[in-house]
Image 1 (cartoon, one colour):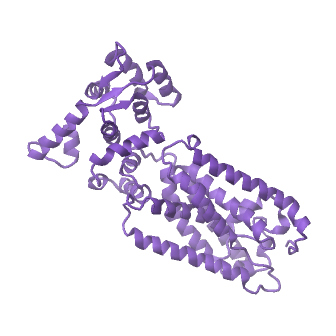
Image 2 (image 1 turned 180 degrees about the vertical axis):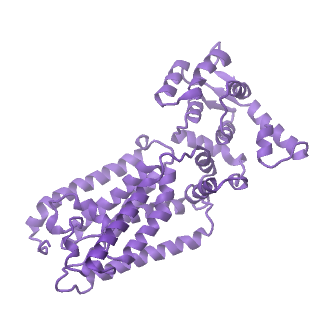
Image 3 (image 1 turned 30 degrees about the vertical axis):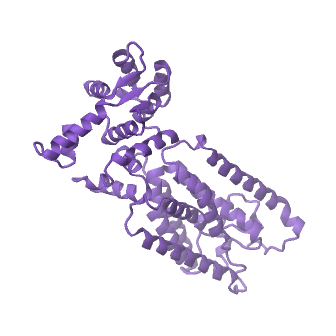
Length: 424
């Protein structure tokens, strides 16, 4: 308790020091942990979840020392003594969560499975609901009061307040964040796009509206309706861009929004969302704008941005990022302007040698993916997506769209007699 209150800047011997320590001690001392499954099953859960080192010993220690008669209840004060005596300290975020879990229950009890989730850094939706009910007693700006942080930890705190709407989630992320694996996906994609742009810009000696150059569409990366059989083009078009204006816009959003999202939600979820937006963009163009080619990573960018903005709107009161209304308006204006630029380019008179200009439908498809699939992902921080019915509904809908789009590309062009431009 002394360490906790001193970390919060309260000096020993002051009235606030004694009051804070006593309140925290009283809260923990009256909490009891209710065991709702057998100790052996809980031990197996810990092992199956990959909890390693000293923390994996906790179920066995609890069985041997805290509940030898299998009464089903243990005192948290006794539990804390066991943890510290075996050098198994919980970090501040987990201690706060233990208090919040206790305060969420009228009888001051928590499920043993929730204790296992807490120790193993795995959380379920029921765990988060229990935390939400008990977190009112926690200080609203606790992380902002932390002092003496290095540059990287301050950046991690900044990311937590930019992305996560719940103070408990922000604390969890701040204390559980690890630098491995680093957020490399968005950085690698952005770097590759810049390199490809520089190569084609130097080769064609054209840096703005590169799609007007007759040689540009001959790239094996561009999606073209005449090359639909080359399936890789439905994804690789994201590395090509109309010009410096589109590349700059996409790269800026990928680094400003994509990297923080990847830091919080992980490389697998964010890369899946980005690529899902890219693929949905090209398939939507092949259905709704059958004559148009496609370049740019706007499908993936709009999937990320739409998901993030929708998450901010739905959790408006909990978001703590500064100037959020002004930034929301600015983001919507910039995204709308980019769509307007793409619409103008699509319907502007093409040069005789350039053919139809790239479609703008990928922007809209990416936004739909972000609002549906992306919002489900962002609202499930540290939760298992496979345990949520909404995730399976969204995933099944996306898979149905993919199957429909594949059959459309195989049969519809011939059945409808679509007049597509000759492939370059």
